[in-house]
Amino acid sequence: MKPYSAPVYNKQSPQHSEDIPSLKPFLKILPAEPRTSNQKQEYASVDELKTIIHQLRGKKFMLDCGHKITFGYFLGNDIIIRNGKDIKITCTDCGY
Image 1: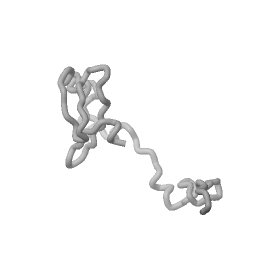
Image 2: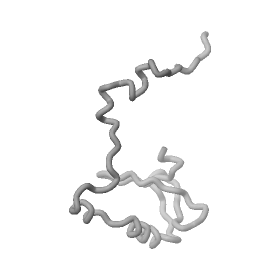
Image 3: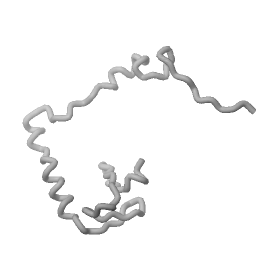
Image 4: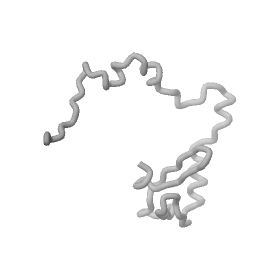
């Protein structure tokens, strides 16, 4: 049996996305700021979100992954919020 060796990628390899012309239009960086003044008014500041989270200080919750979190506790878990039709909240250990 032959030992496993990892594939070697070089600049001539078609594995690199910058070498594949069909992917170049999809690799654009999207702007962080809303483009119109109407869109700017739709978004609240990050300070409002921090205020909401600060109101949870000291409260304990069970996460979707089965782990627990206590907000504002120095040994508390970090969380990942998956936004979408069904919101999922997991700890970082289970989220990646």
